[in-house]
Length: 421
Image 1 (tube, rainbow, N blue to C red):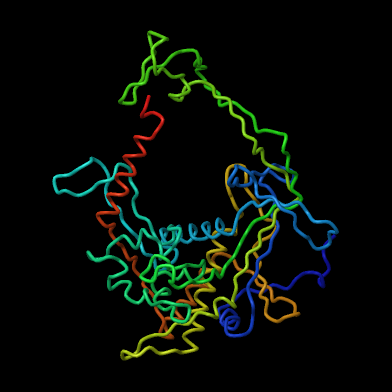
Image 2: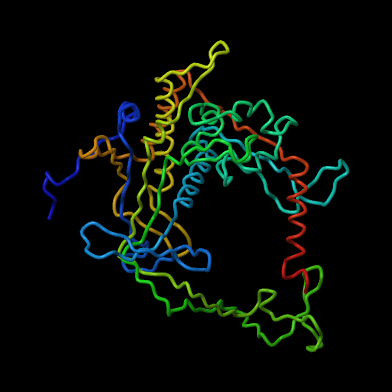
C-alpha cells in the first residue's frame, strides 16, 4: 500500500544559499543515516574487519523501540570511513572531476642499486604519495622529511605559515590541505612537536551491523584447488635465483613442498567465519559546531585581517567538501572488503539539525549536485578573498628518506621466507 502524503518526508535539494545559511546560524550538524543490506540479499553473510587478536569488534547497543540491548558488530570504523572518503577525493582529483589543494611527494624512478650520477633508486616503485593518502595528512613525517626546492618542507617558503596555524588561524591549512580541517590533524611532527596545533575531526562516519549472529564454534574451511593436483610428497629444491627443480635426492636438506612454490592444493581454516545481521546502518555526521571554531584571517597590505564573512565562506567550502567526499564515497553503496558488499535501502538523504527540539530540515544531494555545490562554494570564497592552491604542490624525498626506504626494501627481501631456502 502506498504511503499517505502526510507520511512522506519532505526533501529538497541543498542549495549554496541554504548551505551558507546553515554555517552562519546555530545549526548543529548535517546527518545522513541509512540502512544497508548485504549485496547477496537479506540473510547473506558479511565479513567484518578483524582487529588485534584476530577478533571482531562486538558490542551491545541500545536501539530505539527495543527493550534489551542488541548485539552489534562493527563493519567499518570511523578511521576506515575517513580513509574511504579521502580515497574518493583522490580519485576525483586524479580524474580531474574537482580541483582541491594536494601536497605530494614523488619518489621517482626505481631499478638498479646505483647509478652513475650517484642517485638513490628504489627496488620497488613507491611512486607519488599525496596528503590524501598519508595517515597524518599534512603533518605526516613523510612530508616533514621531504624537500621543496632543496629546502626541508617545514622550513620552506611553501609551508612558512603552516608552522603557526591554529584553529583561530587556519588559513594556511585551508590553502594547502583543507581536508585536514575536515578529517582532523595533530601537528605533532612540526616545530612545536607534541605541542603542535590540533584540529578536531569534523566529519564522523561508521557502519555497524545490528542483530549480529556471532558463532564461536564454526570455522571457515576450504581448499585452494590446484588443477594440476601437484602432490605434497614431491620434494622441491629452490635455487637462490628463485627458480626450482624437482629434487633427485628426497633426503637432501632444505627441500620444500610444491605449495612453497605455489603449486598443489592448499587447505585453509579461518576462525573468523563471518556473521549474519538483521541489517547494517551507516551514520555520517558533519559537525557545523566544529567548523565554526575555525577562522581564516587573510593578509592585506601586510596586516592580518579577521572578517566574519570570509570565515563563513571558508566554513561553507569545508562543509561542501565534506558532503561531496561522503557522497562520492558512499552514494552507490560500499564494498568494504571481500564478502562485505553493502547495498543501501535508500539514496543518501541529509538532515540538517537546525533547531533544538525542532524537526530536521531534509535534503537530497546526488553526486552531480554535490560537485556543483562545492564548485559554487569555492568560487564564493574566492570572491570573498579566500582562495587556495590550485596546482599540486610536489615535494622530493630527502636523501636520508630515500636511503631509509631503499634499505627497508632490501631488508624485506632478506627477511622473505624464500630468502633463507
